[in-house]
Structure formats: C-alpha cells, structure tokens
Image (cartoon, rainbow, N blue to C red; front, side):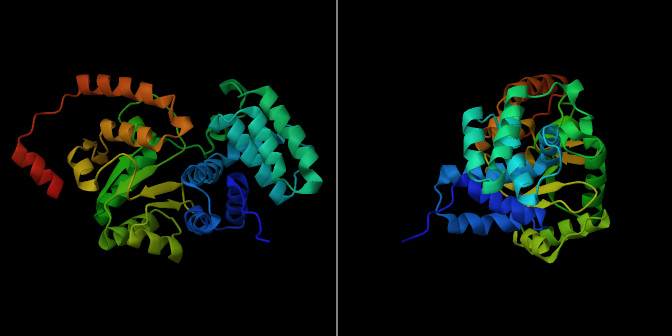
Length: 311
C-alpha cells in the first residue's frame, strides 16, 4: 500500500521543524514541495504557512505563551506557532485552523494544542497596546525600515548591485504610513549581480552560507537571508512584474535608493494574492495617488524609455 501523502499543514510542519534546526527556508521548502504531490493551491498554501510562520515567529510565540505553563517540546512549539499564524495573521477560519492543526500535533500533546489554539482564537487579535512591545507585535528587533534600507542601499551601491527595493517596506521609505517586518529586494538575475549581492551582504555582517550564495548566483526565484543584522528576502522574479529591466525603468530614486514604482509594488502584491495583503492594497492605491500628485514625474520620450529599459 502506498503511504498517504502529507497535506499542506503537515508538509509545512516538516519544513518548520528543519528551519528550527538551523536550515534555511528557501533551501528546505522547494525539495519538499517537489516530492509532495500537492496541487498548485496547496503548494501556495504550504509556502505561505512556512514563510509566514517564520517571519512572524516572535509574535506567534507570544500569542501562545500566554496559555502554556511551561515551554513545550520543539515539535509541539512549531505546531502551536503554525496554528497561531493561521488564526492571527492568515485569517483562516478558527474551526479549520484549530482542527486541522491539532491533527498534525504529536499524539501526546494534541489536547494541549487544542486547548491553547482555542484560547488564542477566542481571545481574538490583540490590540496594539496589549502587546508587550511593537518589536514583538511586528516580530523584529527594534529597527526602523528606512535605516535598514539606507544601510543596505549604501552597501549595494558600493558593490555595484543592480537592485530595487520592493514590497511594503519600500513604500514606507516613500512615506507610506504602515508597519512591516520585511525587507524585500528585487534584483537583476545574472551571476555577476548575484556575487555582488553576496559581497554587499557580507560587508554588513550577514553570514551567507554556501547554499544561499549558490542560490543568489544562480538567481533562484526567492532567497531568504536571515543570519545577519536583520532578515532580507531577495526575489528575482516577483509576481506581477514582467521584467527587472522594465521595473527599473519605472523606478523611483529616493535619497539615493532605488525603489520600485508604487504601481509595481501594488501589482506584485495583487498578483501574489496573499490574504494578509488584502487590507493593504486599497490603502496603497490611495497612497500612490497622493504620492504621484505631490511628486509628478517628468514625461519621457520613447528614446528615454527604451534607453532605461536596456540599462
């Protein structure tokens, strides 16, 4: 008899367990997905669970720690994080998040997982003032996105990296009134640029292991660097953007930093279709309108557009 294939949550738990042991998400998850037999929707769900739970680890731990008397074993802790992420950040209906997550918990701790996740669900999402700190709520050490962008942008410039900042953090550099724990970089895909990225990251104190270095040089779609002063996600093919060259031609240069256009930031978020982006999209649209009203771009002729796309 053929063994039953794991579902999305079970596969996510396998990946999270490996990450807790020191592995890198971008190296662990792809081979697991390739062997999983999951369909496209379940693959996307697994990816969101793994990267989302990893990003929001600190917040998820606090959400469940309120309801446990002593630290659970590592596997049970990973299950609790996974459930908390679904309830608090992914918007999964409580009955599905709790029941399906309890199913993948170790048998001896299923009762604990069920009780804790039910309490997390019943409590609802904490108000800002209920969190012990913004750093816990946003799952990052105390830092300012603009400062990180400036440090990273300066290192990229010094090493000749061809890049754009993208995502919500990039919009914040332009003045968008949001919060995020992410630094996303859209990079040109070529081996030389990959090597320059590695050199720039290492100059800032990042430990870039050989596997991640190889992924950056090869231009793998998504490379997460988490062993450094802050977490950086390098993307070479973001959803909703046709090419790096065209995105670069539309870029905004802000205080020496290359920022993806707000149109591209919005298009990428919309195409990705992540539930957590749903609330941001209309706000980003309004910010784009106001930003463009206050910062009109000079009209360019066809020769200038073609020149910029070829750079």
